[in-house]
Image (cartoon, rainbow, N blue to C red):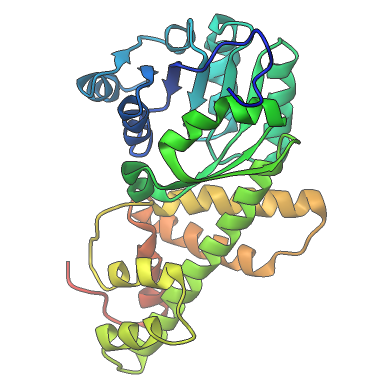
Length: 306
């Protein structure tokens, strides 16, 4: 394999931890690409769902990692990744030249710290957060922002390309992938908040919601987020492809990164407050397009009928 150091075997056996709404289809795409997958999640039903696709279920994180060439972590946050690797015994169960692929959205500083601990044991590490949500996970079209030494990236690349159609090597320093994802989430969160504000303003002054969305979607004001989330903002209870609480977490990471860099992020801070308010009212599990509900309440406008 190109760039793979002499004596290191190809990556064929994958341990996969974190079988949520994105994790299961991602692991399924690895199976379709010919990898052997052993998966674990704290929810037994998720392990069973993966096993139904042809993978091997594991009763623990350590069992999923045993004998794996690469261990993919699609967990919620850095704290879960740390618990899986160290308290859960997954890192110790991995062969000494295996690759840990962290795909969760985490603060760059946390990723750097985790990577240092993993590399100190002789294992390799790839900082590889993703963007594309459930739709991208199902279709295998995720954007993957990977940071690792070139040889490690090349060894892990077939695994990454089985899950994403846009795989980028953004640098060799751990934390650079997380930083790119942080910038991505800053723009995504602010775009959702502004798109909701624009549609809510139109509603306040009596413009038909669907007509307004069609006009904005075909004008210079359009954005990918407007076209994707806008139609769901007009629905009362759309299918959840990315929850409000994800942006509560991710914009929190954005603000943490801004503090670390001493960078002012006022728009991100306002958007974070709007997601917090929406979650605080009990809508944290709703689709993130439903941030617009906060504007309905503030503006005294009627939301779509449920």
